[in-house]
Amino acid sequence: MSKDRLAVLAAMMDQGVIPVFYHPDAEVCAKVIQACADGGAKAIEFTNRGDFAAHVFLDVTRHFAKADPSVIMGVGSIVDAPTAGLYIANGANFVVGPMLNPEVARLCNRRMIAYSPGCGSVTEISEAQELGCEIVKVFPGSQVGGPDFVKSVLGPMPWTKIMPTGGVDPTEASLKSWFGAGIVAAGIGSKLISQDLLDAGDYAGIEKRVRDTVALIRAIRGK
Image (cartoon, rainbow, N blue to C red; front, side, top):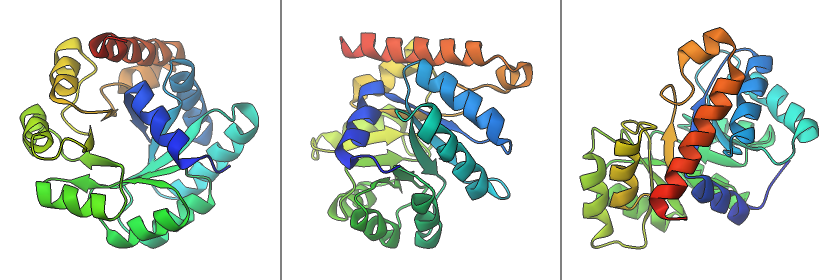
């Protein structure tokens, strides 16, 4: 179910953390995503990384269209326009990629879908902005310079909205460093939805970790 692009972007920035997750079992995905939503992170990035991942995604989006329409399903690891189009047809409300692809940007703009491409330089960030990307993903976050890179970009380009993925931990020290540098959100995968919690089927534990992270970000922002 398509959601308003501006509302999606606002939700991503408001919750501050974007859980990044994939599992080949649609039932497990639904339970994890519901736990994230109940913990205060309704916008989730489902990564396109497994066999038949698009089919799993479709099953999950169909589930939440009935079970909890407030969930905002996004897709990550998108590198080309045909794959982006497939996921948009299957219900994706935002698209994230490891790199910038102008064809993906044009496709998303045509459908009024938010696109956050991976950028590793000021030039790439500027090109993404020219293509209509409101939030740019800095990837891999720790390898391109970490919080210092963010500060350096925001100096001459203070209008830039940055969402790093890779190198962000759900800890007070890490989040203070990144949000103190000026990011608007952060993508966090296995450090948020850890393998031990998944193996134990501890969805209440996932919900608590997400809730604690969202609350920590709000406290750091002074909300």
